[in-house]
Image (cartoon, rainbow, N blue to C red; front, side, top):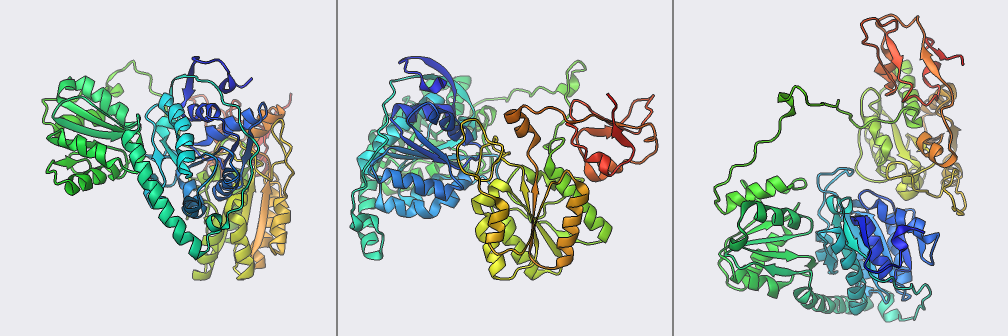
Length: 625
């Protein structure tokens, strides 16, 4: 049995924040869950996927976040409790339905998890999705711990049904991926079947109906504001004349700093968990109780601005600060030391930051070498990139490389350097169209298989219709690799229990109207290079599907082991380093041993035996066993 399905009440579980959200949803009786995988939210969907195999819960990996939200909305307006989860940029994709779904509302509880990524550990931006709560006029909750994440999830379903509105649950990477003790409560059996009751004046948003529904939304928003003021997740603690306002994971840093600085009796803390609509009455009382206020919030000054508006509206002349020189930055996530230092400076405490440990001064310290991100040894994407760059070198052709969101973006790094422009999911196809029209360069775009299903298809149809001229390489490794090997419609090596039909990428590209389509196994360099050469010479829109499974995923599902063993022969004894200079497989490295007999060497613990290297270097050969 999945551990999150335990029926034991009062059990202590050590859970990730994302796992705590899943447990909270199960305790609330969630019956329907959707997602498109994206870090830092991926574990929510991955756990639901496994739980669905053992329960009545319906779960799906949707093709993108817009689809996920619209599918979940259909169940929610039918009276079923639903959860839809995604990373912060995923909500951009789902923003179109979100804005109007706020107007029509829901009948069953609907919780939308948006996982922000301060410091961009795995994202292309660090936007603050608290703005979406204000933009959509929807309630938002922000947990500060896994236990609170579980509790808030259950509460969010109740708020959703009381107001008949979706509720946003915002996390950040630090909360999503930290572990904490979570105490279980009883599971609520899910109501998996609902009824769609027709009400066209509400659910069909022609302008006349939408005007009425906007008024309803604003009215429900004021009810939500009253809820926020009375919420147990919004608290004022302490009696000191120094005020600190905070929310989410930053609260933990504030609590530690207050204790470390010994100022418990001098501080009053406003901790907000139900952050939108802003609890004006509660905030006004807090402002009146202190002489000055420091706001501790990651990314944008949203709480700070709300407090300043509240102070001005109520005629309260209390200094309020958060972002600025000598204070907090709008960049990146915070840490306990930073928060402690800013608090000490703002309240003019005599404080000396602890001296950081410098391992360089410790001769006995173990210093591990830096390991920058890199495509794995044996990754078929590396072979594809090498084939492309080889053809370009051989034909003395310059090209621009629009790329996309996925592990293949690591083609950016030397020596491959096959990413020139990346902004969002699916943009490789559409930006390639623009670059090809605006320049005289050859344009070769790269997109992954899951990303192609997510948002590449419409761009390809547009390219066909408008007669754009570029080469699109679809890197099909048979899984959504970057976020944890989640399946998508084009997977052929499927996880246990997967019973979804296979959708052919080749068939889709041909159905979009692309006339020149080639499917190659990139591990076969000769055939791959021939297909690339033909596409370049054709001078028209062409698609190459570079199809080979991710070896790590393949091994995890099929249990496949190393195919062959290769070694560097004794004739590799010159200064030639072309293999690492142009291919860069991490299993190949320069032999620096003083008694080295070969220039290069293969790390057998990394090599998976794909055999790409022996196709371009005759000094590498199979090992006889």
